[in-house]
Length: 298
Image (cartoon, rainbow, N blue to C red):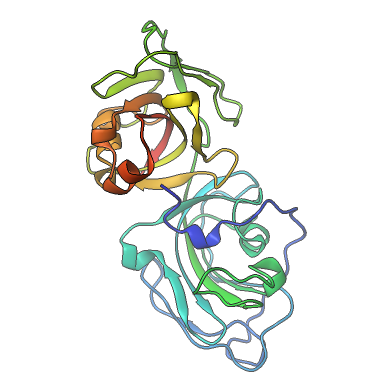
């Protein structure tokens, strides 16, 4: 259930000033040359010489859309590679862009500093030194410690980061009660005592007025999850990774519970164990309660 592009998730960090870029592609320490049409998968050359010690930001194509602000939920395509040219992440090959909250520490520092202030529709190259990337720790097997990262990012759109619609009265006492706040914080969830319903339940808490979700759509969402048993918390994007892109076809319980719901809605789902993925069924011995804010499609 983690963000598809999990390599960009970082601990909360303070945002500092944006560094400037350079037009000297291919020179030692400067952003590597990039080829390929905007909105298509780019090719980034290997870095030349020693990598720069400071963040480098180069606008390859300037868009004419709105300017990105701190806290915006940016939907973007991107390719990321190491200074030596080894690609470690690429949204184009996955066939869909990803959504990230920008400027608030939910992604690596180089993204926060380099993308806030850029315009939608732009293609931006970022060269990110270790102290604004993954530092001395690296990231898994793909990003060694003290790595310089090179990204090309196409800034596609901004999504609202909160539900927008009409609050619906919660009448079913057998289902969890969900908060209706729209202040950017996780809603409260109170799970009743007793057995969970045997069949999947889906209840609209806030009814949005946007486009209806199709069963094969990818939704941009904030969500939290609990085991029904003991109300054990499992996940919470508000306090962890921020907005995620989730393909409904990969999660049968979500596909059943969210298809037909509208963008802007907050939805409660109680998903029985039989409707969880095989991996989830191995991990959880109880139905799972999800509260999902549907923030966008695509």
